[in-house]
Image (cartoon, rainbow, N blue to C red; front, side):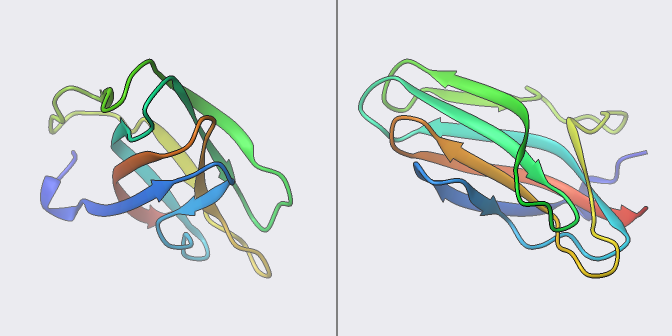
Length: 122
């Protein structure tokens, strides 16, 4: 059961370069992302790419896209976070010698991104 009091929040302004969202995922943990909100802060169409980089990998694995048509278009998933909500994404923490992150990149310019998550043992 999801306890909303356990949720942590990470906020980022995401630009055209692939960037980390939130802190590194602790070693031997998983980051369960339960909710995400993305607001387009570019005056036009924009594409947000959400990805993960696990265990020190060089490349980012794409896990989702968010398309916005206009300035201030907002996407929120889920609409309501319930106690029996399943995580939207799970990012594996690193083993020895690597780091893992949730990552994001904006295609046009910038998105304001908020995620709600819990780190739990793998």
